[in-house]
Length: 188
Length: 123
Image 1: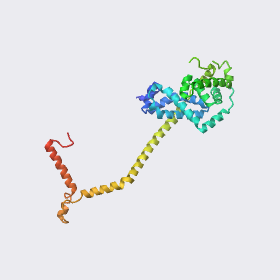
Image 2: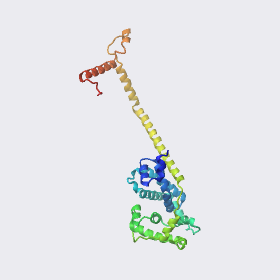
Image 3: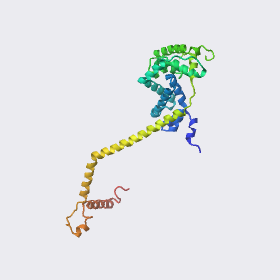
Image 4: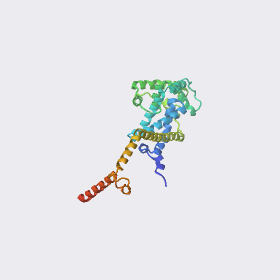
């Protein structure tokens, strides 16, 4: 006989969120397995370091477990999770060690294109050359598909600053990744 | 938003950079951390309760013990002085304040039953 938990992977996300809110660990684990990839990718774009990104993603999901009871609308889980991820990243940035490692990353040379598999690495390196807030806004715009006003609300930055960061950051990123952007194969 | 700056080539790079990652190891680590936290909270709670108990005993323990001894002695006080003879020994269990209290309580119950038709505290 199958347990109810065996059906969790097929359940809608809002239902799993509701179960996790009641303390169902299996539902939470299923939820985490569904969302971990997007959060880890987001963190990788933020920090450019895979190990650190995984560590931060771990922190995000731990915070999710601790605070999921405060989430009133299970349908709003996605936006709430993103907000938590941004909060964890910003908190990490405030630490001295993080600032040091970011400075180390900023000193790295943007990589040249080697293969399609290294796009992520090259993108991360190019992102690391940007100032932190510019990088944050750019990642939220391109990686998460948020509008400028959504980014402004999420990060607490004035809309005009977000707009200029995205414009300037895009140009700098385009410059750093010129090998990809000029290539018709990888272009849109 | 129609006037938002958006570079389609950079968007394409972000899309290419996105990789589906295996999450078993991460999930295991998070779940272990959650279990450890639960264990820590439980242990902490137990330790705090124990500490509270020991603290309460240290503060009120002696006073509580002395109060208990005082009550026991008061209840065991003989009602009538029957001396040291065999009669005194024979009537010792009945000749105390405690016995008087029990008899009074029983009498009140019987009286209550006679007047109201039921025992106090029962329907």
